[in-house]
Amino acid sequence: MAFSSFSFLCFPLSFILLLLPSSSSPPNLPILFFDEAYTHLFGDHNLLVLKDGKSVHLHLDERTGAGFVSQDLYLHGFFSASIKLPADYSAGVVVAFYMSNGDMFENNHDEIDFEFLGNIRGKEWRVQTNIYGNGSTNVGREERYGLWFDPAEDFHQYSILWTDSVIIFYVDEVPIREVKRTASMGGDFPSKPMTLYATIWDGSGWATNGGKYKVNYKYAPYIAQFSKFVLHGCTVDPIDLHFSKCDDLTQNSEATIPNDITTAKTRKMESFRRKHMTYSYCYDRLRYKIPPAECVIVPQEAERLRKFDPVTFGKGRRHHRGKHHHSSQAEFTSA
Image 1 (cartoon, rainbow, N blue to C red):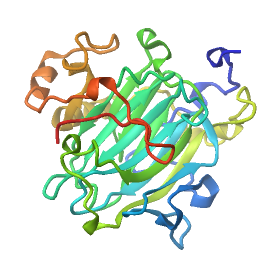
Image 2 (cartoon, rainbow, N blue to C red):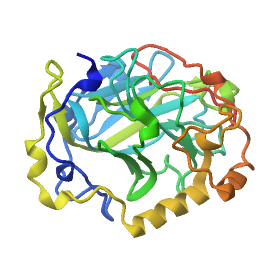
Image 3 (spheres, one colour):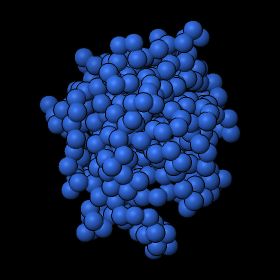
């Protein structure tokens, strides 16, 4: 049977749709110990679990990076971590917090990505979000932003809400991007169970100004710090993908609400995007002669983004660097 015809036994969406409140983590959702939720992915001793059991450091040095992966496989839910990025010179360094099923579906995988791209001294980290569905790597839906704070100075919460109809990316309590499922997207909307990953690795070939600035290991080790782990979703049996466990999602009724963003949150999202978005795939004339069908072109937004350098994605060519590295790299030529 084709995977697209599977029918997952999840409870109604109202049981899993969550909205970030004014605090940095949702109410009634527990902060998990690392060993409860995650397991070591790669990097040997470059992954350090702190004594409190709820905080992790990922190191990048000349030898290797590091990463961890969730113990469970999920179909929809809310996924969050508090992250502090390496300070000082960080060009070429990539920190990723993302969902993927690339190990299970090599040719038709899904992804939902937060990628943090390092920079030279004096320039701040960039944040990139992206989604892929059913192996749709030829249609990149990347967006890139600056932030209203220095993400290397302190911890900030980065969160993904994923349902069958919408994906919302949050930074602290602010929604920064909403991707609604449309008929025109078809299978490009992530719809298969995924695990959650966090990694730090050397992206010298593409991450900063198209590879112009490399990782400089005299500043190593580069340390990405993670804490406040939240994993709240439909867990799926990796052997029997028809079967999911969603009973626990009904227990905390105060944490479940409709799947729209409030008016106040919408205003915050629009303000963030006006002030901080520096790239959207919808306006990439070099990549798309005709924007993807779900794009809504706003002339004022197009004019504002035009002041930033054009972005080239290497003609959609993908980089595959092995399972220990984030699998959704795209080549950027702007700093």
